[in-house]
Image 1 (cartoon, rainbow, N blue to C red):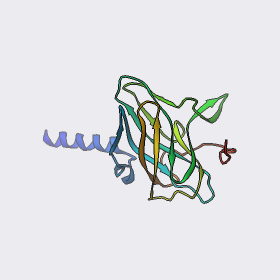
Image 2: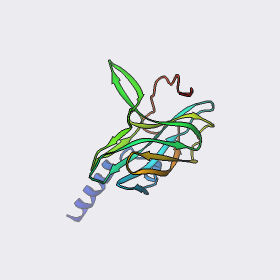
Image 3: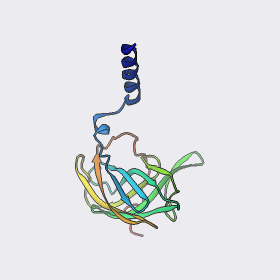
Image 4: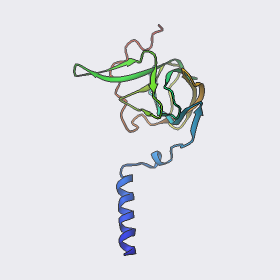
Length: 173
């Protein structure tokens, strides 16, 4: 009976972790907190020389009783930061800034990931290199501003950052 339980436990572990890389397991699990907002595992992708944009990804949880909004931020290697979403419109995937910021409802966890919600780093001053960390801030309407350190992963990190055209992103408003 003990062998069966051990075998089942091992099979369950393998099934649950299939496809998880060593890098994914090594991600920082430290949670940043500001007010009722918790931020987990901020990361970004390495960029090629000459790239003017990159995306920031993470999980954001609201432990409070009221909604809050992620409205902006900064990055030491970027001139400008916006909060974006990717959305299908008439069978075309489009990316746009979210007017008023990204709402984080009470008790909700929102995942910022490639192909979905993300922090858009614009006017990059230099390439983001795999293995380094880059610092910045995230600004919430109610909770305020928190310092964030993003881990830079490889260009092809899971999820694929398919933003389509970025024309106009290098221009000032």
